[in-house]
Length: 424
Ligand code: MLT
Image 1 (cartoon, rainbow, N blue to C red):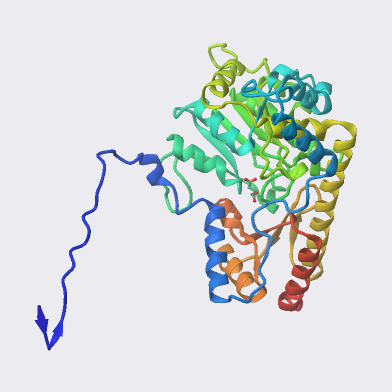
Image 2: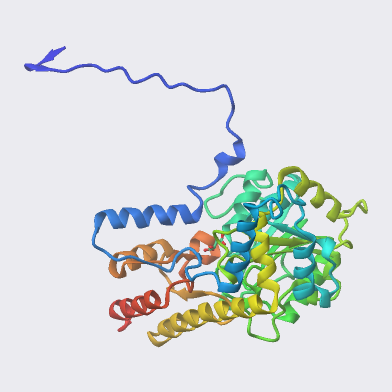
């Protein structure tokens, strides 16, 4: 074609090849991307715009400090063993090695009546939440704390337990609002019955740890309603307050209504190594009397082939006296970071929650949109945080700062925050 002397070539758009497979309609209900990849995308865009900026991440709760030596040595020995005839092993038990199941039980659960066969070792809590959802199926109803770790909501949506997004949240999910006004514990007198209740303590993102009284109330609520609590204890070792239980099974009767999931990720720096576990008590039964543990065993043996043998050797070392001590030191280090961040925001006049029994500090920016605050902090401080609303509607007006950073970065972040917000 010739137009005004220019030669314009028409290039046909390449033909789009499609399959005849319909997209899972539940996937289509999800909002944008999963929270943390979305944050990573924004961080990358900021870095491209400001190539020289030294960005500090207080965003995703990813550990940064080396794995303690006793634990690393155990993994080294295990991997070296794999290179020998005697030390080689292939598939292990899908539920984990008996030695590790026993060690987890002995260290954390024996005193609250749990048994090694109730402990299923895995590649992490996030994956176990997905597998629990697979076990429950699409026909159950779900409640969760708002704000909450996004995996509970998104996996419920993917499974088809929910309706569409209504602009605020998903239909058919009960959002149990947890804000300063209710001490971050839901008003259960107003909460409707659901089959499943996701509950995370210490909470990600608010950092609030539920007290013995609150958990007693939660267990009574689940019993009254015949619900199952999925109790996420991934940050339990960060609890200092003696009145906040480190496992739901400290509450009498919890074994009849609760599954607990936990992980080495935030204790021993295993976010990359991948190792966690889920406890399903023998006493926990479905409406027809069938034991839930049998179904979970069926799920694990069907869609999981056992955690890495090297990771399990590391997990075992975490639970031996030397490893346990080094692991607690690591937790204490991150807790110091949390205390530094908490104090910084407090000194600047912000209202701050969390950071005492958890590695997350929850900072209030009343009247502001969390994503706007996130963008402002990124722009002015070159610091990545996590917008509170990313964890649910009740997280609006907050941002979360993670304490999982190198100390020098945390201290540098403090200086940057002070320079921008010091005269608030
Ligand atoms: C977080 O930042 O909330 C956590 O790192 C997410 C996770 O543990 O998967």
